Length: 593
Image 1 (cartoon, rainbow, N blue to C red):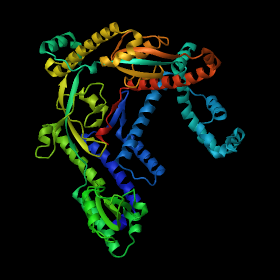
Image 2: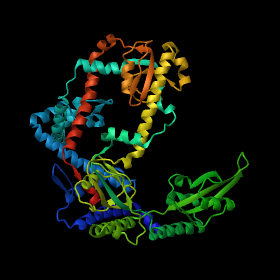
Image 3: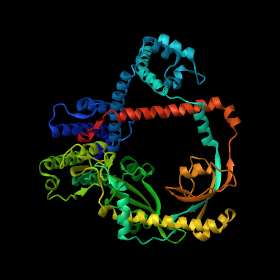
Image 4: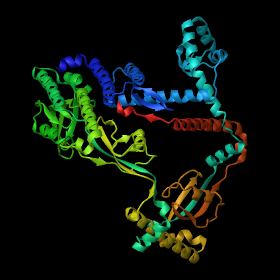
């Protein structure tokens, strides 16, 4: 069987992949009996499964063409799926913006672009280069004499140009002033060095906190324990594992290889042709020398109990089926025995049929759970029902499940007991979920946050103790003695060397309030006590590197251009993110793929 499979491996892999893709779509259709199912909507406009699947298949074929030697696994399919979705999303969102901003492209615009600003990709094409450099005359000659090329280029530019004009229009909204460029330049060149005394409340031992203190703090700070509306899902996970059929098929394959070896086949040649261990298949299956404990127990035992030249019968480990041939033995420099061996591995992996069967089981459980509830749907099955932590409207991922923002969104629009279609996870497993918890915006009861409040009261007490110690420290010592005696009070001195205002300090982290104060001081000046969310600090500024403004004015034009490009790119990205957020995106791909 293995011989025939090997001969037709590439075509079989791709045939199964296409069947699997089609199967996913068909199961999704059957699960909801909808004559025009959709994989989601953008601006309320449905993206129909039939159209989306056609585009998905085209992208799969393109991936196949570009990666002819690569296997198409679950992760590759997921990446192609995400790429297809993003293509749809970008097209619909941007087409809406083209209309909003009334972007028009004339024939003259297209002609000017073709003649004076050809696409950047062409500048890498040897056909248009002379001595490695762009040759405008050669380009224009080819354009004039190759009608087919000219028509293809015109069509490409006509599609591309509206989006370029829109991007320019959005970027032109940004106003760059000399002051903003100057501030940016100063942030990148103005530096400070300091000795920072970290008045860390963690240096104080934990304080006793009474129930009365916890209650008083909670009553005073109730708004700190506000919780927005929350939801939870209960779920079961159906793990993707090789079936008995998959294990038996791998066993038949390893037996075939073993039979070839017994008949005199060359080990190195058979390893190169059949072994599925990518680390050594191409070097005759050689593992080199290894000591005891380096390999899994089954492998270790056979290796050290065999004699040089012995060929093992096929044996199984967690990685699959192996054949091993011991080729050498020795003692290393420490006198410990080592074995040299070659091996062939046939992995035990879930087949595409096993994956399809697992999805069918997951769909069946989801269908039953929709009618009877999850608990009854998995009754008698060895599946553990778990529950997610609280999910909020801002959540994107579901712990234990993965990144499914639309499942989160649906949790806030459905009733208790809602069961979405079975969800395909990144590792090929499936999850079946049931909405199990609905809670509106609320202040958490004291019983639920007692330990949190206790820690806050403890922190407040310790912080107050530190501040009292600091006042005592400052009253007893003059500033020129602070660094010398800080350690006696349990304070740490941290060096901040040549820090920009946007940089962090080792041992403290990024504290903008602290940094802003440091930059108001001259070399040799002490700060007052600086209280921030990260703690309390005293600092001596030891050096100030104030850049020469003449350098700024000498390079102002270049600095402005670079700043403008950066800010325009950021502005455009932020604009695009904002219009995406306004697009009312509903991603329902998980119901089909």
